Amino acid sequence: MDETFAPADLLPSRVPNPRFLRSYLNWIGRLILRVVRTIHGLGAFAIITVGVTITKFWKASGVVHPLIITQIYRSGVRLLPMVSFLAFALGLVVIGQTVFQLTRVGAQNYAGMVMVSVVVRELGPLMTALIVLARVGTAIVIELSTSRATGEVEALEAVGIDPIHYLVMPRVLGTAISIFALTVYLIIMALVSGYLFIFVQDVPLRPGEYFNQLTNSLGYPDFVLLALKTLSFGMVIATVTCYQGLARPVRIDEVAEVTTNAVVESIIACVLLDALFIIGYLII
Image 1 (cartoon, rainbow, N blue to C red):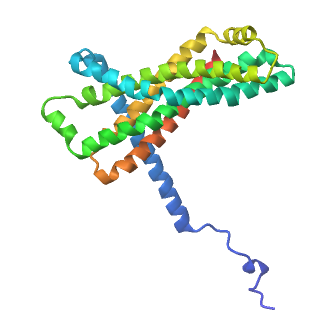
Image 2 (cartoon, one colour; image 1 turned 90 degrees about the vertical axis):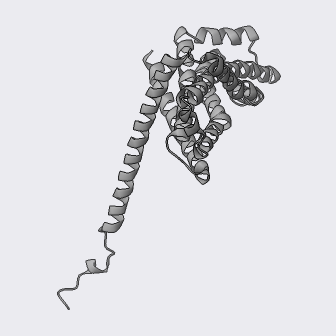
Image 3 (cartoon, rainbow, N blue to C red; image 1 turned 180 degrees about the horizontal axis):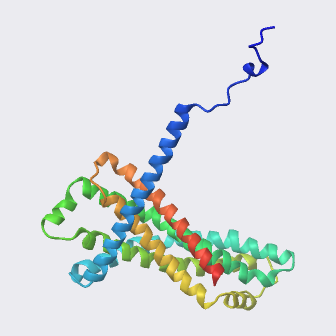
């Protein structure tokens, strides 16, 4: 027998392909650099927006303040039918079913605590933010990126108009106020519609007991953190979408890609922000 032959020679090589490993590491490196550049650009853009809002809020108020009201109408009032439908569905599916199952095991006294934890703290703000992002955030990116591609933004700068003051600030403030108001509306409608389902299912839980459990489970920190969370969601969504629309010159055929990037980045930012508020709830 040939002494140079060994059974191990018949086994496939387990050594990773150097080219594959190098390309994978290059991809990871490019991804990290892209994330760092995006965070750096978003941070600088957000700081500039905050500075312009503080220093120029009352400047040209006759022009800018009506734009804020218009943005509130676009991202708030026009979404009331959709939010009403989703609030009714949320109350029907989540609240009604949860209370019904708690009643079956004799734990209906915990219904208020469960509703506050699930609807008020988590589902209400996050669902509202995603609705506004889908309906209004995408429109913001398309409008601003198209304006940048056609040279309208440069035209504003040429006549001495600050694009951040005229285009970004009204959208940030209007979107933040709208998400806060829509979230409160969605929570109230969901809690009420949830009890309607409970009533239809003949669950032995009186309206007074149901709403007393809700009020006893709600505390002062819930109202403060709800306001901070919803306003933060609105400012993050508007800032990310405006940044993607104005950050760099784009061509018309790149608008779809920029819109996709803005939506993905907004969702990631909202989820990370929600995780921070969860930690805040646990600490408090």
